[in-house]
Image 1 (cartoon, rainbow, N blue to C red):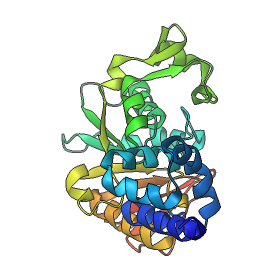
Image 2: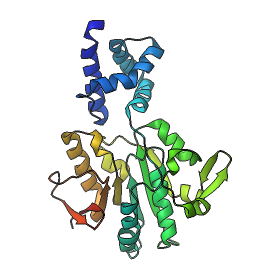
Image 3: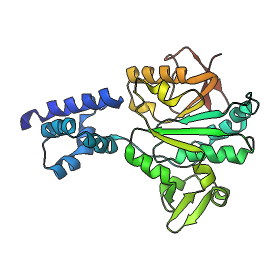
Image 4: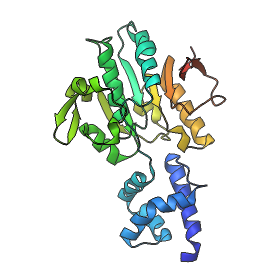
Length: 270
């Protein structure tokens, strides 16, 4: 059995792919590195661990925590955020009284949706108007952290945070900065698998979707499914904002590319 450990690692990679679309099938050594400390802690071999996950559903949560990448920080990719604040948001001021719904997909520890909330508040465009931010991730542990809105002062979360933001939107909390309650209240956190077949029903219609630096972890088949779901979820004319190194050109004809001097993003046609 031990000699066939690679086969069981392949089985585990396929299991992960089928569950959430994260592709380790061609990167087994990386997968092995991420799980070997946990396997050692449990006193199991790879083939035993694969069976253990199926017998103990809570272990799947642990596995997801081990294999997902959760690097993020406040005000990441400032050029795109400036475009969001100055060009995209103003389009929704006169949207027939409907609430603006924004989805931060794969939000990790919450820096992105809170940044979105801060930008909306700072814009002054929606005083007295409700803006709903839905923030989702598959990793239960990072969502629990995100909901608290607490971030260590010396953490990389603040590597690009403008100085004037601290006083406006954070409260000094000893070793931490705490996001102010008015921003926290703007965000609804949900645990969501981007490959869920009921994604549209669980999220509802949205005007803007942020999904930055996420698609790079999926293969073409998974990307097509996710983008198709994004298309159905977005209202006509809605916006899809990806990471600066991500492109869906050729993936879905229902999006047009918006090119600006320092950024590009996508708009659902119609």
